[in-house]
Image 1 (cartoon, one colour):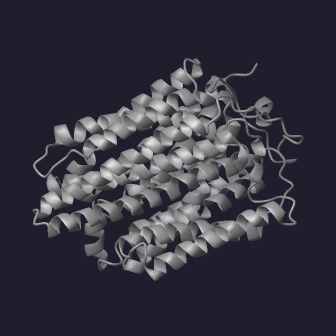
Image 2: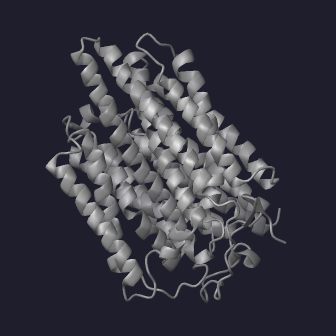
Length: 509
């Protein structure tokens, strides 16, 4: 193996580890919340913010993080985000007061918002287009797809056998590995034309709008959708996002935060809509399934975490198979996303048949295998669709959009489905049903509605995604800035993303 190929391999490992940390921390603290709350003295109103504050800052700062990667260098921004994430993880692991943990999780969210888009941009720009890049996208998609389930597993094992503080401290060795690998294998400097300046007002409007949107949705767990606080928060989010679009379209700056033409591409718009709907269903299912395992089946934290292992393994196998299918052009992106959504929807809806006297085998294992299969099939073509045909200088922005769609979708799905499930549980209790059965009836409704989100995703694949996305034209200035270093493969650094034939990735040359 040549040194250049070795560097590309090490860069891929750095990207995979960074993405794994980001997705792991979406769910790793969930199982540890009771022990964490008791250890730090959280009250019942504060404790959900250990999860919510991460989602809020992660989603709010994603577009800014993606643009920063495009302007200031993918490796530099990846390192900034990783160091911030590591320091916050250490602070959370050593926390002595509730506010210590809340602040640490907020900083983790900002670090994740910087890491995630820069990591995917590094992958796109360091891996050779064609078969190598498709294989790399498969690795990235694997950790993105199973990270949430792995978080529940890891969180349960660490909480039961090492203590809740280790759900934070576990990030430190991974962050150190990302830093060392990135310094060793990812070129310094930037790729593409980087003469622009950061759109500060656009960044403020986008960050505020997305942040308020997520805040309004996650608070529906404690406030109703019609409460004045919720209505004002969501209305303010809409105002800021509309102002952002108008500023990006009509503002005097020459280098906007997001080129609106990017959103007009059907492959980008379709991939982001599909991702939002997939995330809405997936995270809600993780949430309800965790409650069902612990409250109804009476599993401990480690057992509940281990119960997600078959789902994760099935998703990983599906991702590897899908990667080979795309590399060999046996099926296209659109062709894969349609059955993927239907299979995942069937798995989610099957979980809705559970009852209070159910079992792990019939009510959890079999439907979770279907869900893992569908999600696993979807992630590689979805990631490819969101980034294919784009010039290098928009790699970070496109990556940020995909991650932002996932965060907003997760928050929306969880808020809507938890509200629906809670309402049904309360109605069933009022009708005299036992508490366990009333709770399961609520979870069942959540599972079925999650399947509905995936049916909508299939409709997006059918009617929005194009059959053949257009390749990007090579940018005029595709080399790194002077003195910034040489890309891992100089011939590919300025090349457009892979072409797509009939929805599948086609190597060039």
